[in-house]
Amino acid sequence: MTLNKEDLKNKIIYRASYRGTKEMDILMTAFVKSLINDLDENFLKTLDSFVDMDDETLISIKKKESLIDYKDEKILHIIDIFQKLIKGYSILILISRNIFFT
Image (cartoon, rainbow, N blue to C red; front, side, top):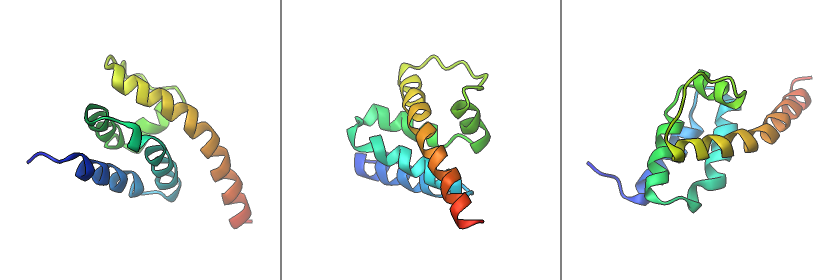
């Protein structure tokens, strides 16, 4: 079964929103929503693969510690955007956790 573009977007947003931890839910949802409407179907498929990665891999990518050598230009572009955007959101998460848990 093939998904149309809107179904694929909904699948990606859902997967980004339900990662397993509240912090990762917030980070991935913000990341996905920041770029999903600007992507063509090929990039959406790449983003779908990206959000399907486990949290450990995504954290290592965020920290630029990933040992995986990505050769696909689309995934490299998504990783670059992820690393730049998430840097600011990580700080906001830490601040909000400090406010709510002190």
